[in-house]
Amino acid sequence: MNKRTFSSVIRILLSVTLLVFLFSRVDNQHLLEHLTALNPMYFLLGLVCYFGYIALWAMRWHYIVRASGERISFRRVYTTTLIGNFFAMFLPEMVGSDLARMSEVSEERKTSTRIVSTVLLDRLIGLISLLLMAIVGLVLGFHHLAEEASTITLLIVGLFVAMGVGWLVFFNRGFMRRLNWLFRLPYMNRVEEPVRSLYNSLHYLQTQPRLLVGSLLLSFAAQIVEVVSVIFIAHAIAVYVPISYFFIFMPIIWVITMIPISIGGLGLREGAFAFFFSQVGMASENAIALSLLYYSYLVCSGMVGGLLFLRASVWDYVQKRWLARRAQSNAPTRRYSPTSRRVDVTSSPQQVDG
Image (cartoon, rainbow, N blue to C red; front, side):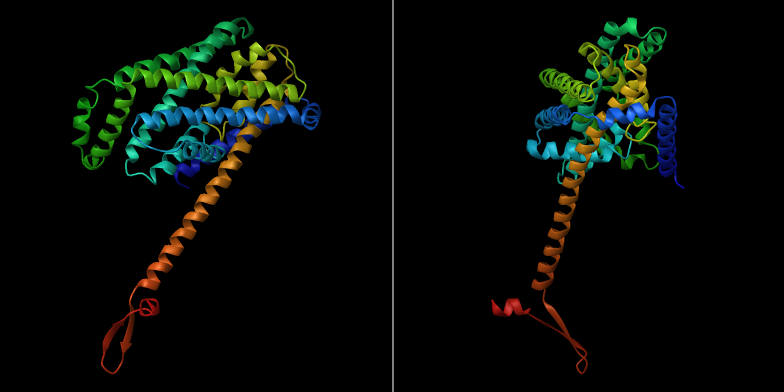
């Protein structure tokens, strides 16, 4: 078993363990009743909002891609984002989505480092806006979190400070000069050119204030729409708490879900929902039902992305087969004469007819 397979097995086991632990501590009959008594109208409204959130996310990435000088249609960016959600179902959510987006668009572009830089900057902008919303949520909901508030505050503020310091250090012009020694090591000179190219692309993008502000605003809008989708789920299962708590707790839950120790955030997400919403009077089984239905939105968007990925793969395969057959039919035929031990090259039937 290699390292990657081993880590995947560990994440699966951890997700299953967390889910089993949570289900053992709630009223499963009550949980099942909530799931089966789902109001389809509110659920579908929430699903529409979730796809709207993906559209805003894709719009943010498309905005960054256009600023990098690439010309990719919004439709292509949106479908690639959905495909990223498909892979996020089987990998840590953030990692799977970003790797899929990089791979899908880079395959058809010569400037792959530029595309990778747009995905990285898109993710950084998303993390910054998420941490800002989580800090605001902590300030507004501090009195609901009792003893755990200090730990969560330390985690989120620590992440935000670390990201800010990392941004200043990484985007300092002298950063790459300090790594010259690294590229003199054996085999490292092979990656020097792509690494420097990627860094220059990222550095160019982050020097555009208008781009950063516009991306942040799109990111805030996307996260607000995603929170609204969760509110619709709560109405779908007839669970009512003040709407403000969703805006307070959801950014904190998203930060916790980003920890790459489970598959698609399973287990972590449900535990975070149960912990935070139980602080404001929601039963644990209701919070877990809310989390599972919210995860079903990721599954729905992932299935759409999977179908798009399958269609693109089949079309690519058919296209390659057609081109191969066309090249074979247009190639000269070789005929071997045993008596003369000579290979005669003649035109194919199609060439003769022509």
